[in-house]
Length: 512
Image 1: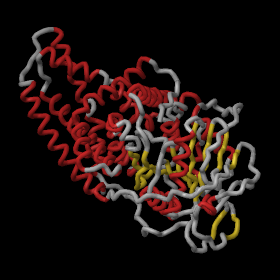
Image 2: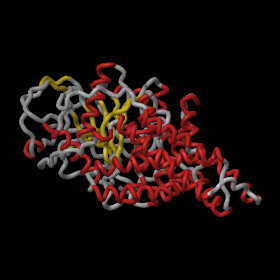
Image 3: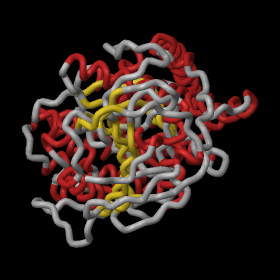
Image 4: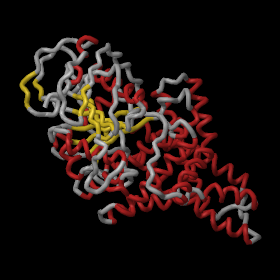
């Protein structure tokens, strides 16, 4: 079917002659010799569209992709060494501080003190996810062999962005970012597909396909929110089975590392025939100047990507979940299970979908590169976001129609997560009662705290370096990061407590 197309939307820049397919992967002959891209070339022709699709015609000059910061310091070997050294330093400092604050034996002498003393065992629980995170830093998996810096592949890639259609400015910036970065580094043919719940117009955007989900559309299982939109486009979009899809949020920005990482992963999966689902690292410094506090609060998420998540992906699994953004998946694999996850799975549809894919035989992989996103813009949204994740994961563990062998690791993590609101209360009780904790609790608790401090600091360093912050600003950020960890831990615990007290199916969309 005819859709808006231009040299820009086909994703090639330069002057080489290359065989191609049409945008959906069906044969269409060869491209004529192309010419350098610019505003005139980016101007697209408005043509007829299939039902549910709007073609945008938006001429305008490309901004071009800015060079991405050098992140070679974040190689797996260097991160492993850094993780060990920083964890050891924090461990020594924490142990010394505890000897001064809570000298042993510190045995309880009242009923309340005895209760607090026994409750300190909760401090040992975070060691499970913390240890997995540390192991993730230390273990280097079978990552893809990187092709040459400018080597191209002919496999078509669709950048798919799902939006409610409200934050048009953020969506426009993301689509322009994809086009400008792909013009600067054209390593594969691509096009951008926006899936919106409402009709929208995005001025100043090059050729892009917009799929509007009809108001009356219902999935067979009654899926809601983003899952409903993803299922609709899966049912209606005529993508070829061998097209690869890169899922992005409406505020996700890519760079040269993203493009090369996608290229390497797609090339390896097509050559091996394994067709694993990929995911890479997400940074959160997009709005650091306006919201430095909340950017620092999300440093742990970046470190978690390079720790626990990279560990599970290198094992071919997604037992701990999956992010909804920076998913790299072959269309034939995505269609195998679909996104009709029902209302219970629609709160965190990405995690539900990952478990369904594993049960269906799919395996996962790590993708090199970084996608940059925004943190929340208020403490209230931060807590509501964590509450949504908590409720969503709980629904997945309870309702996902797969064997418990696949859900057990996530259930364990959920149980630990549900108890984190107790940690601040126990800490206050220890100080108030003037007691200590059992020796084994102190060892395990100190170890987990040292690892979490390391993760916050490493995540902060990655975000600040990629943001190109000045050395003085980075030093200030590192100090603030460590000092604010207790505040961030309290915010995380409030999100879990909110989820325990209000476990409904609402889908709160944070402002970005």
